[in-house]
Image (cartoon, rainbow over all chains, first blue to last red; front, side, top):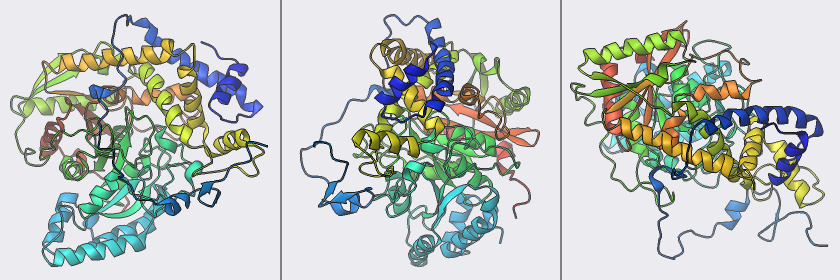
Length: 95
Length: 486
């Protein structure tokens, strides 16, 4: 499937990824090439084949509902771009 | 001192016999790093002070006759593993200021085993790449030939061990990122069974494919390392609770009676003649050692790359959504609103290949395309996995080339993502199927190392390592090192 510049704009918005207008055409070309590679999958009939999301078909384990981690808020927030009073700061969302 | 020419196993003996101290050993490697790494750019962070302090503690234990199996031995970690208090970049601008607040389980375990971390290795950004040309911290040079790539994504780890800047290093392998650089740099490297080594604290790329493993010069050293890394971890929801066997006890068993399968599909179009020749020579060696060779078929081999380039980007686009400029990592200047903050932080923080994969993943998972791409890829994945299980009814090990060509020149494939992806032609199937696989050196082509890939059934790492070790008893390819690095 050949992607157009508008397709790239739409996908980039879904992924919350800023893309310059000048990058749209090369990205459309690159992604179209990758899609034609992956479309080689269509050469095989997979009707009735059980999808394999995971090797070993792991089942999620359950554990006791107990506190397992200590409170390390200050340490964990040291890597944050902006914090205040223990909160992560972002631009104002509600006026 | 030429102790860098010794294997990890030999260094462990020298430490126990007190012929060398851990401080001397680590200082020797730190001196080599200081003197040589400007040529290779294999490392992002070197922490000499921390390393020497840890080495001193190991020496105190060794002096008392105490210490763990790997006490005092140096290593380098791929910069994908979180290290408490040490910069952890994942090769990305997104994390160029990220001091991890905790240790990955792999880091913790090897430290508990007494190992001393010297440095953190360069890598393709977020482990996406096959040449180490996608790092925010610059290309890594293959120590075997200037201007040549070391492979990727664990290119820094491989180059560092090849240049003898450490006896061993950790790596991760999502589609070949341990085996392909091991092949390109003349090393032994193992990707264990999915679930064998904890993924906790290992920055996620594609969670159903990612698996950590070691690089070393010998299979025996890989066995020692894997012993220290493997085992159940309640912090990784897909960690296996199967008991970990000894990986070193069975290494000396002979190959008499071993059944090796050679898939016809691995010797089809795209395989360089010089690589084919080295692999065929290796097959002859295995026959001499008493193994029998059986031609097999993996009929869906041709669909591995197509399926992989749906599954891996899909999982990546989801995993990398956490890098949003809010809780950690890069944030753009003066965002006007939350959407601007997300979009510009991510646009500035991620490199081109990471952006391509996020977009491919977002597209193939989006409404209307999910069945045609993602679901289809999962079905093809099942067919690929079933091919291996059928083959393992008849054979113990599957053998072939690790890569279609030896290491290529920098810049050769950077303009064509698909040409770059084809590097992983023989390696991605083990990730899709969750199988353990290993690359070991089996010859040279124009002065560059060639890798031999071995694959066994799930949780048969001990057999994989035994087969590799036995091959290394009758060949000496693994003893070769790049020249001019004394």
